[in-house]
Length: 578
DNA sequence: GCCGTTTTCGGCCCGACTGTTTTCAGTCG
Image 1 (spheres, rainbow, N blue to C red):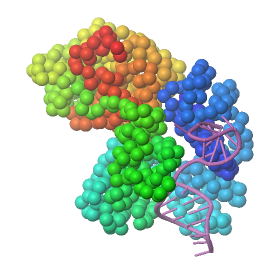
Image 2: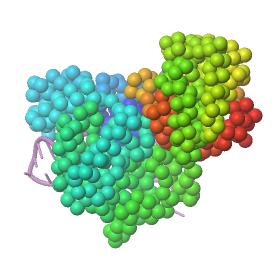
Image 3: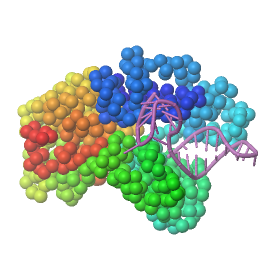
Image 4: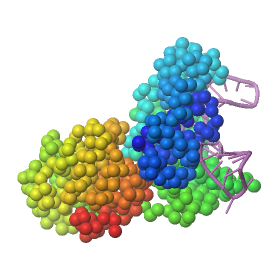
């Protein structure tokens, strides 16, 4: 059973308990368990049956959670979850997704008016039946109707590159039009999370009302959700929500830390502060005994006064970073400047838009020492994929360009299709001519989990395969990953000295952070590639590198940080994580 | 339900905004 499915059950228990007005601490405990399971770097279900101590060691997961997991593994569900669903209609969980509607109101509507679905809610609000309830009035009804309609069109997360583009443009606008001192984008986009739900912008200044006013009058603002003295929330043209916080410059560091999150990271930090006799809020670290602010102007101070080494935003997910930092350690994360080349790209030989030479020159411009040209193979006819003959011809072309541009090494490669049965799309005698073989799935996405896992593992066992391209096939906000036992895939890759790709395209980011964390712990090597189809796509590299950083990868985990000689040894399978 | 450098019982993170209230609960991040 996947961590996601397990986490979902605990989340539902928490939500149902909340609707029933259960013990808030017990509820938080279930929420925390769900989050910890979802973020775990190993398969929790499997670990519970094989090595339960490993699961018990996770702070926040105790005996109660473990025995529920065991129940779920036995019978697909646990007693508490089942009993709750007998008391509360499951459709109420759907209502929780309506913005500004929480468990208390949902419980109230259900008990007083029998509302169990979004449609019920909409009818009741239209008919003016909600306003009779405590603390409900006309305005609340209107707000709910608006939220329901808004939810239908915008209930989604956005790609990280979209989020970062919008926040860059908003910041540029504010810098130009408002009296800002310091400005930064916080939130999940600063942590480089794969998708963003909204934009968080932080401004320090001396005249908050001016900045807030400027913000809500941005030409792309279509709706103002909230507007106060220190913050405002707006909806932008594409449906994306943006929040602005305005504060004095002395508080900027504290606010940056606070609004960068993650929420889970901050909760642990605040608990720690409390144990040490401090309080943390968005204005600073305050010593409880005399109410004195001891940090807040700079973000780093916030960590230092708590006895922690400051850490990069990407790892602030409560996945052990605070414990490490407490010991004076911060992982030595891979950086964009460590990357010496790219091992997956296309040219006009298949579906790319630029020539071998154009790609090589663009790479050289970027400071790369080597690249691999990896066009598609023949199974992808629509992309002009190469057959054996064409590949050999293509190799001769690559060699010519390689000789003409001595400053960079161009490796001969292919992105060969993994066919439905796990065989490769090209004969071995052709593949043997190459320096790099990337193998990828591009068809038959809906095989069963077992079949897909077997298919990919068979390809990984092929002695000529070097890299598994975009291992789960997902397209963010568009297409789910195919069904796959990712641990089995990683294990097979390690056994066969195959590297796993982090495809840096912002629509893919595949492997994703959590799987990449798993891969690292299981001893896999990673290749961060842009899968460029033209020279401009090299710009996506940071999305891949920051995904790697979210998984705590160092440059030693990433083969395209290696000097060419060492890279060649990995490609020849003479070296793998020595 | 979880946890222990006060604790195996009794705690458990913090503040802004809104809409409805005459002092606050609900929701969000």
